[in-house]
Length: 259
Image (cartoon, rainbow, N blue to C red; front, side, top):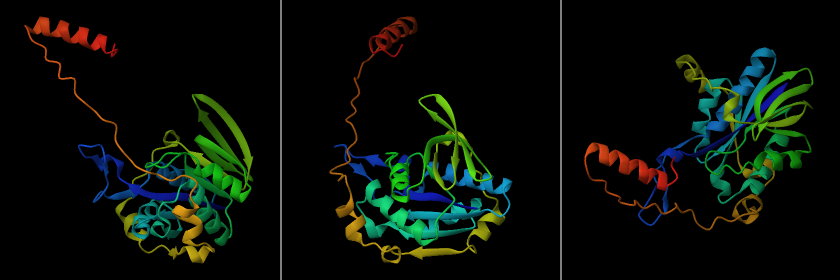
C-alpha cells in the first residue's frame, strides 16, 4: 500500500504582523509546514505501523520545501517528491490541484492520499475536493479517525459536531482535522536520518505543466489585497475605590455583551 500525505509549506501566521494601515507584512516571516499537514503525516505513519509493507511518500510544495520536508521525513515518511511553489506564484486551489494531480499520476498513483482539512495560511478547504474530482476517486473530509483494513479506509468524520462513520474503497482521499491525533516529535536520530532519505525535486515541466496553466493565470480566484481589520481601543477609564471600580467594570462588560 502506498500512502501519499500532502505537505504544504506556509508562512508562520503567528509571526505575521500588520502595519498602522492594516497592511499585512510577511517580509522576513519564516516558513513552516502547515500544522494540519503534520496531522495527516502522523495519521499515515500510524497506519503504516499497523500495516507492514506500507510505503509513505510525501508530496510537498513550498518556496523552500526541499529543506522543510525533512521534518516530515523525520516523522516517518519513507521518501518525498517536492515541487518548489515559486514556479507557480499566485495559484489558488484550482491551479494547485492541477499540480498535485499531475504529480501523483507521475509517481504512479496512490492507494490513500491524506491532506489537512485546510492549510494554515488560507484555510479554504477546497484542495481535497478539487483533487478528488481530478483523480476521479472518492473523498471523506474532516476526519477525526482513520484506519485501513484490507481494501477499505474506515473514516470517522466530524462535521458541525455530527459524527459519521464511512467505509471507503481504496484508492481514496481523506482530509483530516487537528482532532485526529497529536503529531509526534521526532527523536534526534530520526532527524539525522531524515537527510539521508530519498528526496526528488520536480519542476512543473517534469509533471507536464507550465506556469501559464497553474500560476496566477490558471487561478480561479485572484487575491487583490490582504488587510487586517481595523482595531481601536475604546479608552474607557474607570475611577473610584476598588469596590466602585469593580462594579463599573462589570457594568461596562455587560454593556458590551461579554457576559
